[in-house]
Amino acid sequence: MLKLLSKKIALQWIILIGLFAFAVYTIITKSNVANPEGTPYLFKCFASIFFQYKYLGKSIIISVLFFHILFLQYYFKKNEYVTKNSFLPVCYYLSILLLTKSLTIISPFFFTLFFFLIIICIDLTGTSIRLKNNVFWTGILIALATCFDLSSIILLLIVIVTLIINQFSRIKETGILLLGFILLYFYFFSFHFFIYNLDEWLLTFQQIKILGVMSNPIENLSFTMFSLISLGIIYLFFIVKFKLISDAKVQLQRNRIITLNTRAVLIMACILLSNSSYPDILGYLFVHLSIYLSILAYEKNPLYINDFITIITLIALWH
Image 1 (tube, rainbow, N blue to C red):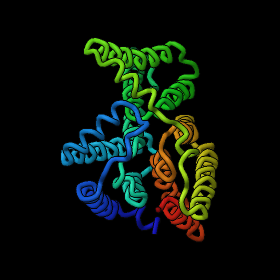
Image 2 (image 1 turned 60 degrees about the vertical axis):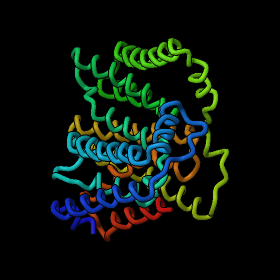
Image 3 (image 1 turned 120 degrees about the vertical axis):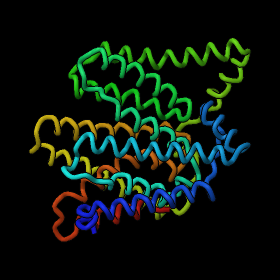
């Protein structure tokens, strides 16, 4: 199965178009917004818009999903994880979103992944003024992301570690990153202060909840345990496997795999900060799982082991 998919780009196009059409249909006919209680200010605003103007809200979701696909495809191609042109990352990504019903109930992680995909597409490997500008705008984007989902604060750590991996030491750029982050919050503070709405804005921070996975009951505990154990093992397998593969590659590609693996580990911290419950918290892993599965499809596949791993991954995610 994977061998055929990896070789037939026309088949990938057909699958991508079909999945995207089905995703749009799902959004138009079924999508709703998760309970905004305990979420940051902008997610509450989005939920309010959605409940008052359904079609406008659904248009926003479709637009954001389109950019998810665009940025994921750009990132995968730019980093040359495989030598051939491939649309498998976005095919897997759409499949996972549909399997997990993540387009039926829009949770905060949907926006976290949107900003995460933008940020990983930004060039953070330069040595010029352009790098400082990119880092500054990245800080602003992360601040904006935290206004949709507090878990996005982990993106700050991800960017700092990315700078260290690719630049060895970037203390000045880290300061610029934090400046951009703080500046946007200062703007929001000033805006609400001057329109005499500061108390309401600050109240949204008091209502924020974290560790939702700990406070919400889990239905069907046996399948949940199977899912978590399977995903944990597979996630670790991907990290170790591609680390070993990268050791035989040139320095640039090794750095790319190390960066990918490091981000995959760090983004798991979003699960602990999120106010969402299981299985919504698994959404933070979708981008990396899609990338790992896509790379796996192009690796040697004795006894269809890679096909088996792919099927187990999708079953573990399905609910």
